[in-house]
Amino acid sequence: MIRWTVIFLIIAIIAAIFGFGGIAASAAYFAKIIFFVAVVIFLISLIAGATRRN
Image 1 (spheres, one colour):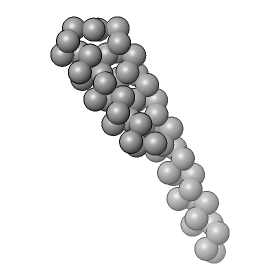
Image 2 (cartoon, one colour):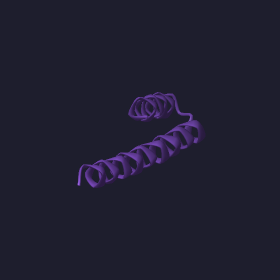
Image 3 (cartoon, one colour):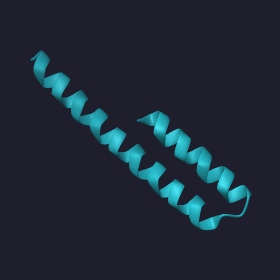
């Protein structure tokens, strides 16, 4: 999932350089959402792994 975040971030940067503000904003928004989803999934798996060991 982090790979998708980086891809959307690169798309946002390239779109911003070429002046496509709407596309850049949308790509940055999707990158942010995917990043936070990846962080939440990571934390859930971290907690699940910690409770499984005990």
